[in-house]
Image (cartoon, rainbow, N blue to C red; front, side, top):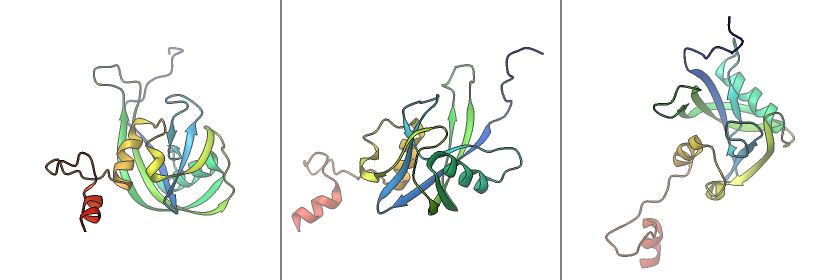
Amino acid sequence: MSSRARKPQHPRPAVGVVVIERDRLLLIQRAHDPYRGHWAVPGGKVEWGESLAVAAAREAEEETGLIVAVGDVCWVGETLSPRGAVPAHHNVLIDFNATVVGGTLAPGSDADDAVFVPIVEARQLPLTPTMHELLDTLDPPPTYDAVSGRGRVPLQRQFKENA
């Protein structure tokens, strides 16, 4: 057998934890590649024999010091090597809503930092690629009226200004 580790033959399941408190989203700054220094929700790979919810709670505690109660699935996606490239990774991501029930916020394994960020400011951070998709489901970008001549003013604000 070669000294090189074999690549998995199937996608690997991974989980994430979406904790929102007072319009602030829990994020960690990744301490390791891929995407070292980028921000994402806490999460990681599911261990053999571990349920998705248990994996999500474990990852949250390992990376943030917080104990969470895991709720329903809120987003599903995947990370995949770029098209045409030799596959280096393929993970199926399942993110769960969660609520903090204990612990103390502090970066742990795999995290250089752990913070609550206002959701409306999260996109200003360097995010992992899939975070943009997740944020679209949590904080959809506003719909703009191209006909009004008002540029990129959100429709909701236009109605308030014209009222």
